[in-house]
Length: 264
Picture (cartoon, helix red, strand yellow):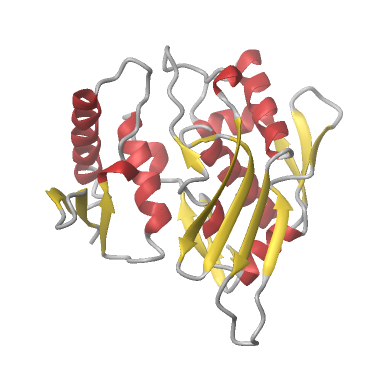
């Protein structure tokens, strides 16, 4: 096992900076054919949001997909922590297998393009409440610096900036495990799982999250009714696989549609 920030991580785990966990940084990007996402669907975007009461996050880069980009970044960060280096050797075929994607040339090209896109995405995390030393830490970093090909067409080195380590050490971070994620069959189940996991550092046994956090449109023609049906089936799969205990949809006093989810 590898130890990161005092936490032991196993085979499918990594210590993910909470700023990189699903929130506004990642979302479902609908595609017409539900197949490999076309890069024309992506647009560069800028936004500012609070991931917790004392951290402000600024992002400038491509819109990142919860289904594809989040697990890919998880795998790269996991390898960085396992190999204990900022120069991570990766094999595109191995990554495709980990993602549950067919090993084909077009899929390799898609993964390689996504990794290259990470090098153009900039993230800034800053404290707005002083830490115990009375300082206001801030880190500005790209997700990766570059990716360089080795001797074959499928072996590469991904260069991480040292500031990624500062995101883990100076700000909130949490263990994220993709082993259970890979057991899930439905797109909605995967989206719900990652959404819940990314908020678990707030509460471990129970989550109350708004419907908008789970309202994911997986293709351009989906209606609101179809989305709700997908979510129902997704929650049922999570219950059947023992990943959550129960869920209940309700309307809060402020009129917001909410989900009350019991984790344990």
